[in-house]
Length: 60
Figure (cartoon, rainbow, N blue to C red):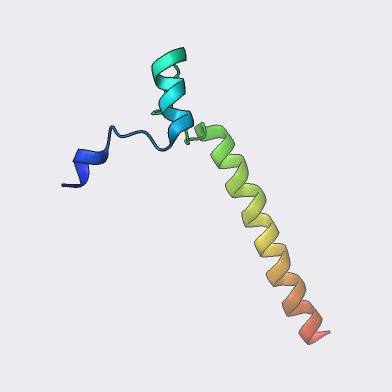
């Protein structure tokens, strides 16, 4: 049942773009792998620095 609404447009703007200008929005939303890796490294290092900072502030 969930697959019946899969081709239904999200809103009127998307419907207009698909019908009149030929724009498709089916493949969006995914980042390339190198950008994902850079994001994981940046946010992971930020989290590690935060944890180290909190732990050092408690013991020093």
